[in-house]
Image (cartoon, rainbow, N blue to C red; front, top):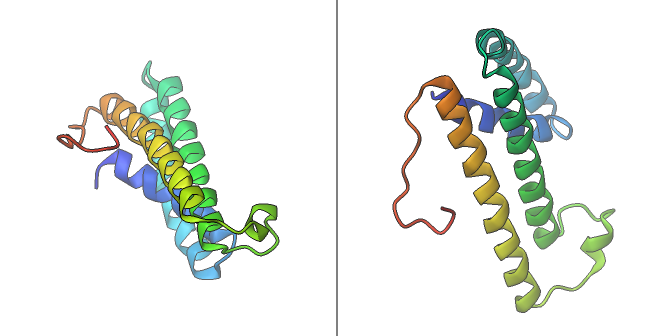
Length: 128
């Protein structure tokens, strides 16, 4: 698995681990691998760039997660979950998700470059 895909999954799993014990156990193995990646990359001059990209990836995934959860009304304690969403509001949030996904893709491209891996090339994709 490419480093950028691994880190993408790690940031999502980190959010799931807060709500799910099995995800929390799975996260342990991911964190061991993360240590290896950071050890390798932080010895290089691009270590800071890698850490910043991971932070950007985590932020984008968190925003996507929260926006999708609000649409699904997944967390009743969320103040935005009490809002009734019409189709226009759902569409507006879907466009927000697309914008967050662009940030996610940009972070993955940086990670690919730092790792020396070939970036994904999605031709004419809405997130590009």
